[in-house]
Length: 162
Image (cartoon, rainbow, N blue to C red; front, top):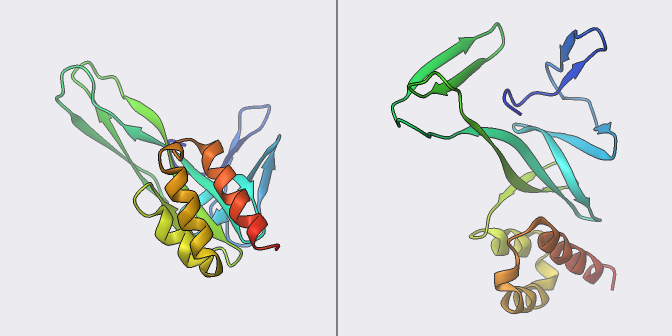
C-alpha cells in the first residue's frame, strides 16, 4: 500500500514487484481478488456484479501528528519516486486509506464518493433512473459503509435482470 505496487515476498525474503499489470486479468490472494485498472494499478474487488465491480484502491496517506513541522524525504528509485513526510521526532506517519471505484466490464474506472455516486449510477444504469432515485431518496443516510454500497449495487443489478 505504501508504494502502491503489487509485491510478492518469497520464503527467503526476496521481493518481486510487478512492473506492469497490463495483460494480467487479475490476482487472487486467499479470498481476495485484485484487478488491474490503469492508471490506478491493482484494485481490490469487494463485489463483482453483472455490469460493474465495486473495487478499492488501498493506499496509505501521510498524516501529521505531534509537532506539525514536516520534513520531506524523497526516495528515488530507477522506476519511481516515493515521498515520506517526517515529523520533528523523525517518525514517518502513514494511515491506511482507500478510494472506491465502480469499474465497468470495459475496465473503465469511475472514482466514487458521496457527492458523485448518483450521477455515476445513472450513467451506468440509464434504464433504471426512477428506481435508483427512489432507492437513494429512501436510503440517503445509509450509504456510508461498504456493505451498504454493495446492497445498493445488488439491488440495481437485479433490476437489470427483470
